[in-house]
Image (tube, rainbow, N blue to C red; front, top):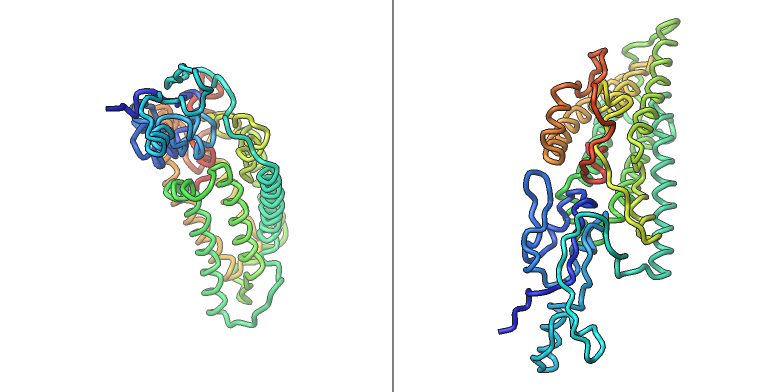
Length: 378
């Protein structure tokens, strides 16, 4: 009987793999397996060359000529009744007897991906890049202004204080559900079954921007003032605000490969290049605190000198969300990096930089990769 899985065109580059487990989620024959946070090619002989792994791999670590090998041959035999063709022969000229076998490439990929973008897909990609930059960037700037002013007063609904607090709570919960839900790996796997994972980061950026805009625009300010700092204390609070913005910039710069709006995978696909793997980076503020971006955000949240009832509600809800989200992210980071990250946990505080001596390491980067949006997974 014909062995449909004896040979195939599958190639796997372990060095490019970011362990996002998309391949394990979409593969119907368990060709890939994740063990100790690392995805490995365990059953290459099971590959039927359906191409799902290549389509859903965000880094180009997996390549396969879908529709040209064993799965295609089975269909070819069923339609034509010919049983003498070899796996891979349905795409070759008459007389060709070469067979492409699976290989595990531990170095660099030996060739470019076989599928190229059409003009329409290329145009759609650039539209998504522009949309993500505009919506994501615009909403982020408005949010920073919102934190500085307490409220933008764009929409006044004339609600009583109780209704104001309930509405504001709903807006916060909507943002938390969208922001945290879309970044979780269960959603990524679901998204991979619907569309290319290259677009996940940009779609996430657009969705987050839209929900954040709703929060900023519809937020209602309470008339009840709880604390009103004046004089030097007011200037101190304003200074903390701008120091926190500087902290955000420092943290992003230290990450080097931080992709705020999810553009890198799309642009790499358009240019037919491979995205850079996201390294586990320990430099800059990450030597004093494991999550400097979240620490800076907490400073921004609590730096308002005018503490109204609605602002206190906002501060408490966002602080709770950031702490819970950080703890969940820590679990994912341990799964991704294993003992390397456990050692980092033992030596560097999570959210409050209470140690003056920075974490000393022998290398500024550990060449271990994780999912591209793990650094912002809240």
